[in-house]
Image 1 (cartoon, rainbow, N blue to C red):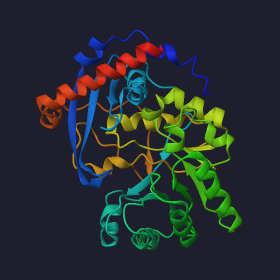
Image 2: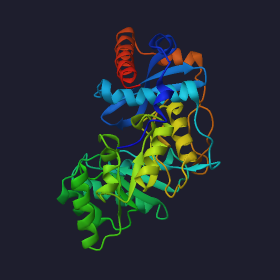
Image 3: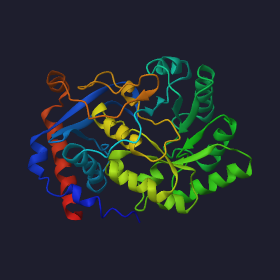
Length: 336
């Protein structure tokens, strides 16, 4: 199990009233459907150390959401560790769009060293064609796919072996044992495509189990789902695997935490999935858009009050988000 004894005190002493008094739920319209939504709802909270984000996906319950709140408190009340690097390379993200739309999606990101392509939302032929189109447009880019556990073993094996130029495949199948089986089958077939674990890290009781099972070559770490920058650093250290930092479809306020994590990692061998601000049509703060494929670590951007008000969700959704905040806070206080 991960040793978090040095991190837990960060969550103590922040009352629910203090969080709720400075929290507002907003809706961010998206340029294209992503995770089956065109409006990403997030809660932004202003703390003494700056703005922070609390945005667990709607289906997540209090226990899982409490980790996201832990990251919120770290960002808004304590800040992040000092960076080890001044810039962080990032990849473009191509949702499961039709092949003919790939070029338009990539154009929103500008020059990038890598591209992550979402798969497992269509038939295999379409998935393969989408990835091949990205490779045609950016032949020098590192290309990775993300199936979000959506493939069977046979489907994943077929897609990965059909795309030998892939750098890695992110969570192609669900669970740790299936990942290990797929990784072994690929190596036996002569494939050098790496396997990256995402859900198998952030949704497991013990995030280190994936390394112990030799189920992956690298791990994908996301600040909010793992409970904050410091906890994510601890997991990476104890796992002993290379890590790539990715967005949990955060607003640019939340992206700042991801950049802080990537900047603080001892090693950073892969471009990070932190350029997802390009997927939003508008944001209340300055979007975290890369310059020459890079993002720069720094404090979270400050939202514009007028835009914040324009994006504010209606009263019933405010109540819904504040209830989630209260329930997650209750879990955190039980565990503190």
